[in-house]
Length: 72
Image (cartoon, rainbow, N blue to C red; front, side, top):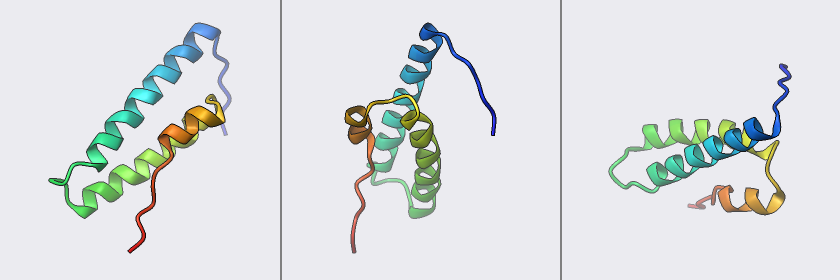
């Protein structure tokens, strides 16, 4: 495990970058032109970025980016 210290400005920038990355991946996951393998790879990456975001976000902000699970 690594530890990093951020000042307030850097923390806000990290928050912004993670939000934008999550937004982009959500758009990609909603794209019907992408096949299952690509969506699985995006989902795996999404979970990693989401866990990073969860360390700095409030529960209300997290709920916006929680993945909706589809039941077959």
